[in-house]
Length: 291
Figure (tube, rainbow, N blue to C red):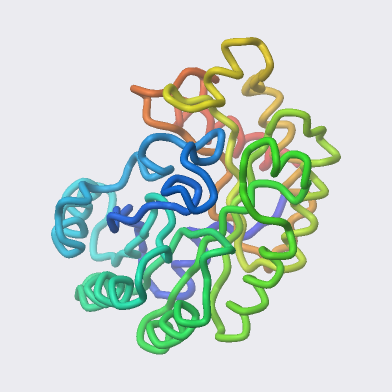
């Protein structure tokens, strides 16, 4: 089965191996600071989905250098993308955002920045800043959509309707920003058809897609739902078959940035098989190559 991987896309675009370094910019989220809520999305970890990011007490430059040390054995003569991952990375005064983004852009080994955020946190001032930065260094904006289905969105406490995502994509494309959309596969109450519908919908709009396995992390409200028997998780075999069906409907012009996901092992409650990332990736790739 032919599809476009993030590694092949980055190699072609930048002419070398490119590795993402997860950064914690020290931001929060409107779903946590009381603006929309205080408990976050039902699945969100205490690290704001930035469990593998560097220490926010370090400067952006120090985080990049520490990240380079961690992946030094994996990349030779390559470059890096500074990935602002934890919480909502456009949710701060624009002066603060500019300072942090600019510090990342000015690092000599950084060829692009990637900014994880919510579609409802892209005001005109932020869009103007992103436009300015994108004229200097490529910018990817990663939008946490998770699902197109409003009943599921309400259950997970996403906090905005689908049309907000649609507008965010239009606004970002208007300033030539590359958009990556996150979807979670296996959300409670969603069928395979529901999931495929979400994939097809975003692929008509987005430049890249991240397919994330639903996993249950300690300290989340989803963990309580799981323990009470209200939520179940997929087996590796079920997830692999679902991924194959998703990839079948993803056009080659949409870059696949992720086919799975793994939470911090210290917090992982289920599914435990997801902790063996090498096995998961090998199983998925084998299934895709056989199609």
